[in-house]
Image: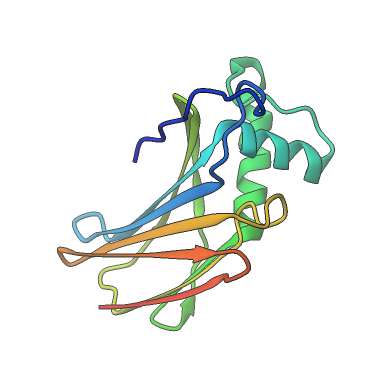
Amino acid sequence: MAFILPAPSGNMPAGRHPLHVSTTEVSLNSREKSLEILVRVFTDDFENILARKYSRKTDLSSAAMHRQMDELIKRYVDENLRLSADGKPLRLNYIGFETDHEAVIAYFEVPGITALKKLETRNSILYDLFDDQLNIIHVLAGGTRKSAKLLFPDKQLVTVF
């Protein structure tokens, strides 16, 4: 998903955007027997919440700080994104992150998943920063894609296949 930022208006500082959104995509990879999870967040919002929450300097585009940012991203997502498959809590293994234009994409996986009938998602990403946060969730399994949105303060989503 590409984010298109509007040109700054006279009353909005450059680099700011009026849209507060994250996208989480959960895909069942039956060949690899795993769930693959991508979390996409605007870079400036992610840097802001990481700095505020963990009282650390943040720069997600700095190669020199990449390892430190890995730790903060993993910690933040662990605290704000919970998944359960078919009633069993899942532990997300952090793979890494990359920047893509104005967004950061964080990658996670859960090995040992061969089928998915029901996915329970608890997503509160950036809820501690914005009261108009929208979190979009896409779940792909068995050739079927289901999408939904969570608008602050809603955190829970159940996807059934």
